[in-house]
Image (tube, rainbow, N blue to C red):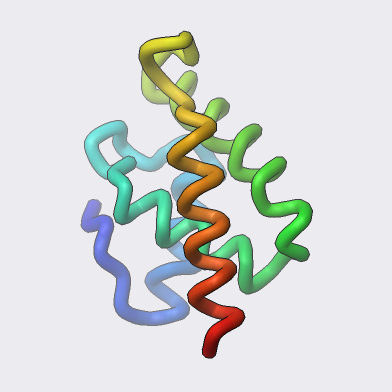
Length: 93
């Protein structure tokens, strides 16, 4: 599965696979995280997006066999950075 999506329909399908735990491990890249963050910012209040991503990324990591530890799995700093950066980018436009 490609991590590059160019349409709203493609983004919706990509996020759906992520949320169902069916997105392959190798497809979860930084670009994928930005795509999902973008989708969530379009559909949820910014104050809720970090909590949603935190929970759903951890669940995805577990679904593909990656443990959520201090050195692997979900990374809070990257997620916070991406949410803040995306929100600021959209606010400026």
